[in-house]
Length: 297
Ligand code: SF4
Image (cartoon, helix red, strand yellow):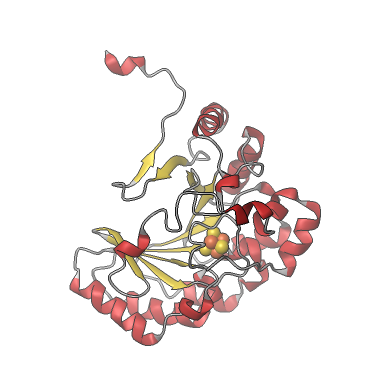
């Protein structure tokens, strides 16, 4: 299974004036060389006890609600399955099995809804949220999305109504951004709508060669996100699924950029710089180029 090509009208227009958008969404011949580590760099398949559910940590589970997105990012770390819509949709029976699994594991208190892009499937998302909010053991709900970048018009009153179904638990929206060119007036409008739901907004990014691997671009991205009410949360080193090696920035360069950024932007605008190791204990925070000799005293 290879990642399909799919783009929205919004991104198509933007790609005409932004190289950063073109590189993210239009396939390159380099993908065909199949360079990278493995199809499933995080070994997610190994941690999936029930269809659509992944559990790598004891207190939280990931639900892959759909494998559909409004547009497909060429560097997607789940490109082995994302865009495979045949397999991609969960049925109500699948959702019930997931809920039963969670009930049988009372240590699970946090749910992350991801995919694909869960906001592209409002009916299924509504069905799932209605089931989850009733579970007393669940204290935190997170939803990951890129819809405000790829198709901001789809952040409509129906989506906002569905997000507002989460009342008792805090709702965290993990918004995926890579470059300041993504912050168009339409996207900013969609972000404001998401803020109006009362959800806590965080951003996630991946270092991408030739797209955001410089201090000026990331400074602009993180400070603008913060001014829109989004806390930059993570920037990750590319996990390098097959076909994405051409996006990988080397650790040394990333480190230099993150060190320079730390001196230029506030702690609030600065995300954690991490690497999600396959079968590692957690997302590992990566070191910066500071003088740490004071720790030896
Ligand atoms: S929006 Fe997320 S899941 Fe979809 S293609 Fe992009 S990175 Fe992958």
